[in-house]
Length: 235
Image (cartoon, rainbow, N blue to C red; front, side, top):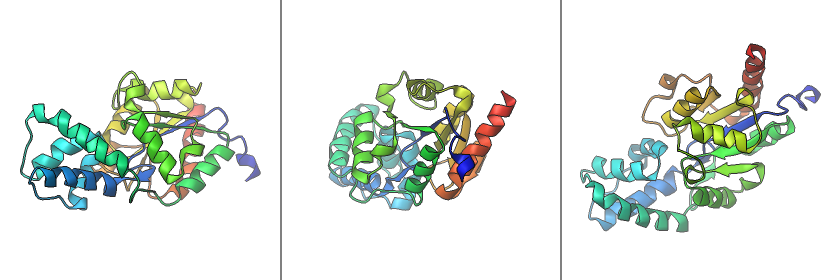
């Protein structure tokens, strides 16, 4: 793989977090179920609530309560959100784990010359805490949560801000994600898009029309090289 040493020089690979790098659904849905129980509402099965994660904690709360048959008035959401965050932060990696092959793929991307960042609608402090807890923090040159950017995905400014933070060029960047906010941000920013098939999405992932869809992280480094080569040729 000697020819790989500079294959991604100057490239920025931005990653979504929940459902893309880390399988956080067990801890997020458990936290939702704690709130439901406190409100006297029956819990939701993991498989039922899992697709609601892709749009952030507030959406998970609102959608989760509605699905459980207890729709919320808008005025109740902020207090429930604060309770959700307090419980979640204390249990952020009880069951959450990186998806299979993540560490090896990140190693290879780094060896190929790429800079890596996290571009997530999760709050930055929660993102850093999660990455620390699951042992992934050391691979990333920046972590850009929604609170650290001009807007949150699908607004393209979240993604372009993350790329600019690392001094990258938009035509030498890729967003790796799992759901509609990722697809929307990448398309609006004119940035190449790789989606994973195992994440959290209410829209079937193939309908989001990624440039490449991967089923395992073993496929990611070669997918990045193919895409950036094509982007370079177009440029």
